[in-house]
Image 1 (cartoon, rainbow, N blue to C red):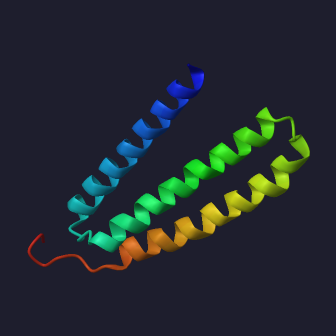
Image 2 (cartoon, rainbow, N blue to C red; image 1 turned 90 degrees about the vertical axis):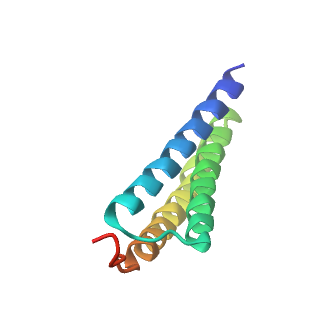
Length: 98
């Protein structure tokens, strides 16, 4: 039951993040193309995999693996998140929205 609740909360947070991204891009006048949506969703899936990996290591009692395994995924999330954020904001604002 707790796993079902945690999964529901994670998907609810993912839906809120997607809505917030859509609202931000609309408010700033930038276009969201299909490949930007795909990159954003893939990055959110990577974040979920990172939390799942760390939680699995802790749940299995492999506390020695949390730092190297989880640390790898955290560094990967930070670097890829910066690249995705740069690609999202690189687009010029639409003149019609100004």
